[in-house]
Image (cartoon, rainbow, N blue to C red; front, side):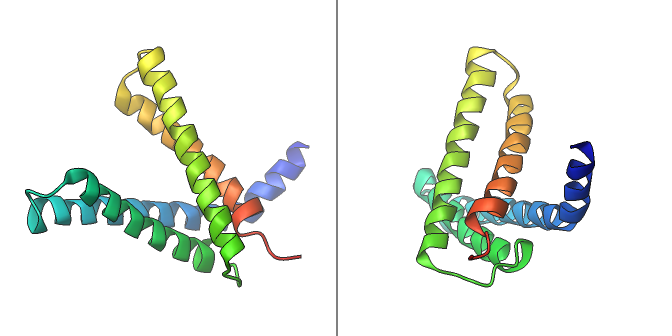
Length: 138
């Protein structure tokens, strides 16, 4: 069992590194666009709308980059987009639930909880995308 896990980890190390790079770039895009919208272009604008638009643009980048580079999926179709949305929605729910549990219920420091929860959610999304969203057609 341990040998199988070791071989899986070695085989998927490159994919996981690409996953982290794409996730980091998506975060930079999200924060950068939000800063651009809320601080430069529309400083008096609706912050929720600006945040939502920045997030949606970063999600589009995230999907395209994961499809083409991280998981090297050759297909793009509606079912794949639906699977991506389901994983994204599930991961958001998991993140919100774990953050609420760690910070609100257990009283841990919010940024500490955020770091741990983000790491756990990243692991979930890596495996969900690997085996569900971008799985090869059979």
